[in-house]
Length: 430
Image (cartoon, rainbow, N blue to C red; front, side, top):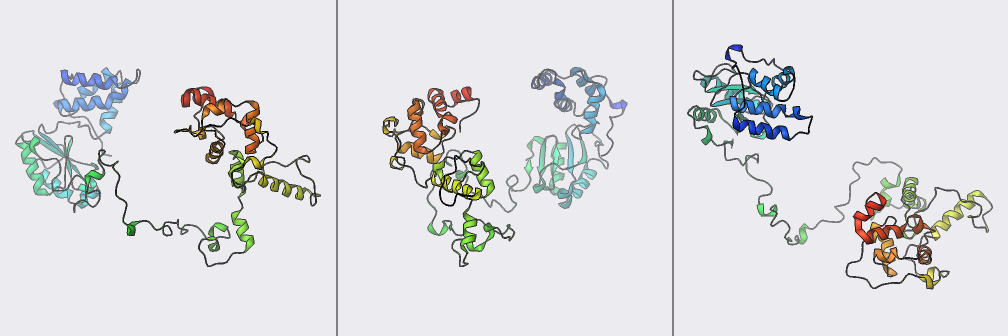
């Protein structure tokens, strides 16, 4: 980075003060920062000083430092670090910043600098004879697609040619800079492709007033092909894992042995652990097994083939699978339940409560509850101990309804919705 120094003392004014308009803006900027952090306004205040004087003077730096109770050196560090601050007098009508970074350089920024040298001054940071114009080379101005470009004060002029820049300089020199078109100097639309729009040509498709309107279904020939939309295995390494076995794809001409097919359909230990952590209800599928505990002797059924620990473990896994029917349970599946303790059912309302907001109730459990006439939080909140036991047995939950406190959750949701739930439990519902 080049060394940036303040202007010579001969051109420095003796004092500085914000005028009435800028002083009001200064107060607005300082008020944006918390008490004790007002020094964060140093950059906006220096910019206001530059807008007022045309450049940042030594007196302005000291004035801003005094206003923000900052050491002079701290404000001087900011002013000399950022190239947006002009430390020497610049043209009163235009200070032209020519982008010299690679995209603009490749598109002819050197020719633009030659125009500045011929029409303003051979060297940067020097004004013309009348003191109305000056120029400098700067780093990227952020519109690379519209290269080459220049910035004059706060406006950019893009897609320039040397001839067009010469006209712009003449207009500013004549005091007509406010009449010059900003942005691209061609018929390009902002940063759109030079050849014209290639996407979003119809503006009504992105307007708020029309984007919600239903659109016509796509023609049959444009509908996605289900087979073609399947994820690709291009990034998957070929291994012995079932997921990359071509025989497991459907349809497939490759035959697979029963052992491989069984290994592919069995849940992995990681899936078992996730299911156990989430306390998945047993009615949600028979393929999830709980392997995180070792059954005690009292839990292991007796019978033929149960003489060894391995046999006991296999029998326990089979029992877990048997407790998780693949279809929704019915009263006939649990003949030991006393139907006198069954909760009172109700007809399905027009808008049932979202029972899945209760921790422990998933989509399938919600469907089972609907099948026995449970549709609202108020119903669950009113369950007696006997009714909870009946539902727990019906779902084969083994005490889970009480462990997860369904009744208290439902009561909070029934009385005050999500806000009451958060107040009681300190977290959002599901």
